Length: 231
Image 1 (cartoon, rainbow, N blue to C red):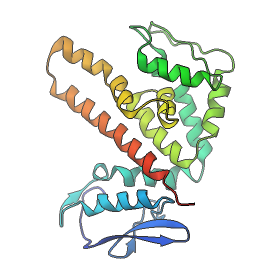
Image 2 (image 1 turned 90 degrees about the vertical axis):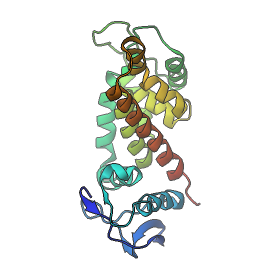
Image 3 (image 1 turned 90 degrees about the horizontal axis):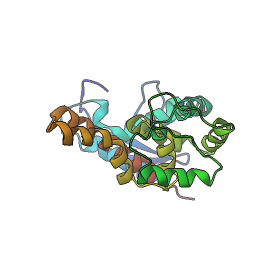
């Protein structure tokens, strides 16, 4: 999609074999590996179609212009064929989780996450230092069980959230409904906010924070719309 220009006139959504396909001039959208972009949620399909419809006629577009499309493509072509590979990758992030490094003490967002995790028998160790924290026995296995319960949609969202926030534990709590997207953004941008207070305005830092916030909110939208599946 990089460097392409809008070539279509009309965008629509078609129901096909229980899935919903955004289409351009009646033709399916093909993902990089050739699969058709089709999702289970009509609401998500409409939102994806809206992304394509908002591109101006003849305008250039990149994958960054189509965040919901990118997440759907990841879900369909990368995660669905082998969900366990994604779970294993995410588990690796959770073993040395950013939420467990609390230089200024455990904040309110972290407390929400740890309280939610305790309901699953997960009690992460935390540190106020820089050395890697050693997690208690059974931590990895319990975290793996929590990830095993997540479907392709959740895994796609977790991948975006974990990268944006630097914390799988926080991301799991967001997907589990225990922490709001607003609180996730606040926690993820905390270091940059502290730097701005200390050193003053920094346009690059501000852009980093804005991009991170957008990624988190886009992932939240993908999750919310993707769960609206007709039974």
